[in-house]
Amino acid sequence: MKYEVYKVLDYSRHFIGDLIELHDCSHHGYFDKYDSLCVNCEQRFECQWLNQDRNFLPDRNMPASEVMKTLEFAIHYVDAWLSAQEHDLVVCRCEGCSWLRCAECLFEQLRESRLRG
Ligand SMILES: [Zn+2]
Image (cartoon, rainbow, N blue to C red; front, top):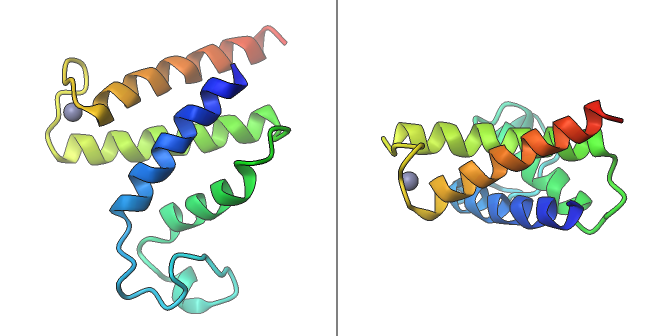
């Protein structure tokens, strides 16, 4: 299941990365928590997420709780974006909506497997 999760996260990384505006970013998308420009940036949440993902992705030993948090953020972000673009998330066949349904299903599976211990 872990491989699937990383595959799913990889797509969301590209999806969110493509949406982020980096024209005015003096850090070129590398989040610096000590820089007030970053801390007050309106894209700080997605930027922070991308940066943690960038660091964590090669780490196949990332704790399950972290994997779930990372996946949850991606789901909420993509969901919000697609909803704002008026996609019908239940039936739309675009790549983003298909990803979302797959990611939500995977998230549920992860949660259930954690509940079972
Ligand atoms: Zn769609």
